Each structure stands twice: as structure tokens, then as C-alpha cells.
Amino acid sequence: MKNMNYVLLLLFFLLLSCNEGSKNDQQAAYKALPASTEFDVVILNGRVMDPETNFDGVRNVGIKDGIIAL
Image 1 (cartoon, rainbow, N blue to C red):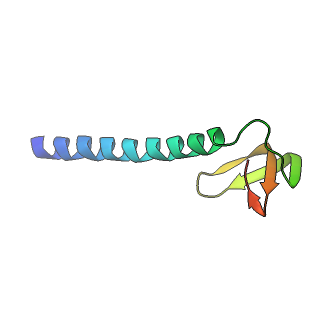
Image 2: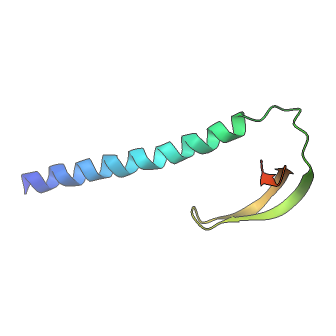
Image 3: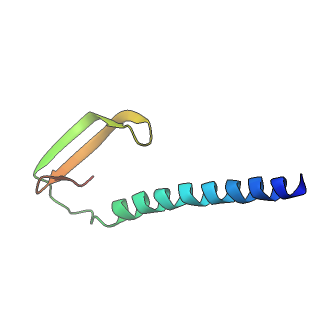
């Protein structure tokens, strides 16, 4: 039983660390864009859906060179 507690604790911290890494990657992508960036297409108040994170909300979207940049 004692070994099972250690395994569960280790699994918990492993999953927690994986989740934090994805948040840091997303934040780094936002910081990489300078404030004066000009986009080819801007969609204001567009509906954004991300099935990977189950995000569904209204956001502004910027597209530059055919790639969603913001």
C-alpha cells in the first residue's frame, strides 16, 4: 500500500508538470509578437474553438502569411 501511494504521488506530479509546460509554450507564443505587428487579416470578436483544450470563446484573431498568428 505504501508503494502504491508513492506511485500515485509520482503520477500526479508528472501530469501536473506536463500541463504546465503547455501553458508556458502558449504564453511564449503570445510574447513573441511585437505590439506593432501588422496582419493580413484581422477578425474581431470571432468565435475560437480548440478541441485539444476544449476552449470555446470569443477572441480577436490575426492572420499573417496564411498562418494564425494571434
